[in-house]
Image (tube, rainbow, N blue to C red; front, side):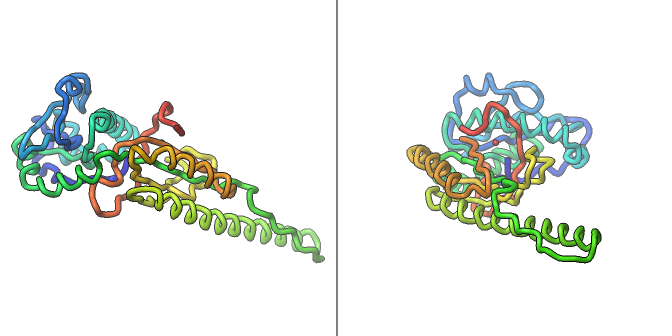
Length: 283
């Protein structure tokens, strides 16, 4: 998941009390859906209505989600993964019912009145985003370097004994690695440009570290694409065609996702992965 619309977080003291975690903003929501959607505290999510919009929220005990507690917990990768997964589950449920503006992870307000105030203040902006996202989903395409897919330079002949031969081999290995990275980067750029031309909007996030991606090779492309419901078939076919055209990188298509990368006009920050094995290539 990537950063999204930044309704102002609460700035009150951590410790006792309960804050309000914002999941996302929609035009309307089915009460039956909320009743079966679990929020941050393990209870059902609920709606805050104002200015013709609906903010879907859940209770957030300040002992865990207050400002000071969040500062600590956001450094804990296990805690962050659990919080991101819960937040994503609510946003994903909302997106199945229509357009949603996902809130930035860990957006916590003091109370419902603060949430309602933000809906009123930002009504025009949020309505415009909802209009833009209606009928679209986010699809992700990641490209991983394929070792050996590029020609390896032959080791130059020479003399000088074992030490010189070792240095030549190392130089050849480094040259091959650099050339492979260059070719993979060019392929990733070409793939992104082609996919962006088939999408309503596109974002190219920084490549994820292998510890986050879980892949055995480096990531060359971490793209997000806003695709209309009627254009998904063509988008899938284009990904398949590009995979055959660029064997230097292995393409992985994921989605559909809520539009985390397109909830506002600013370039989004690095994507936050929520691993979901059942949401593989159709994260």
